[in-house]
Length: 279
Image (cartoon, rainbow, N blue to C red; front, top):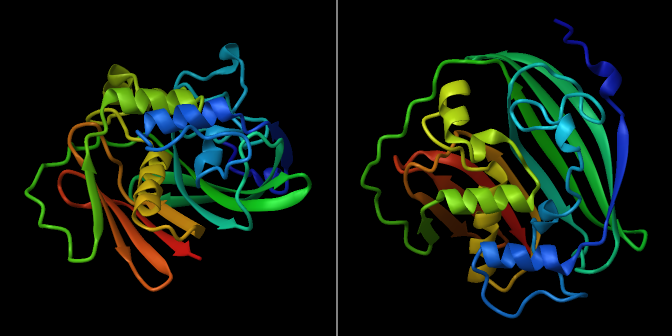
């Protein structure tokens, strides 16, 4: 198996998007956002740029797992399990709804490693988002590919302690409707998020997998509703998968100029850790 993908490092792409208010308003509806519908000129909440600059692979070019076939901008890594494992963002100015934008992407690194679950590949992609030629947002994403492995056990629900004093928190059930709508809004056909038979019988998960980016969106929504201070930087990393088998608890512990964030599964174990810097 060819594991040398060094020629992909430095590969670039450009994607244009109008930051359409209809897409932004659909995200508001999915997330039960209060207030007036977003209008042209309004600031796009972070990280709602994920609902724009969507992949455009035709249906015939999708692989059996629902992802676009390997190759093209991203390297053709053969490992079947793929996930958006983390990201780091720096906000220079908010992206604006209804203003044409450009996303510039560069493959920064491709690293082949070996872990407890087998062979792994880490792809780091850097993005720059511009409107009117002005840099608004920078983001670096980590995409992880894994070999097939043992089936993943379902979490065992436990009685969770009360959140610490001063902590912002929310508990919700990530049901199939939410997972479907997030997949639709991000044009993500990865079957682990909506096809239960595929997720359990082919990839060995105990249920439908909650999107890591959805969890990150929900954590930042919690911050946005708790404080008027804008987020100037955000980073997250996934540490364990979440499923639609039980409630998801979101915790936000505010500090002086930052917020420590954690998403927990029904067993109370951390599934995603994040930090938001505040202006």
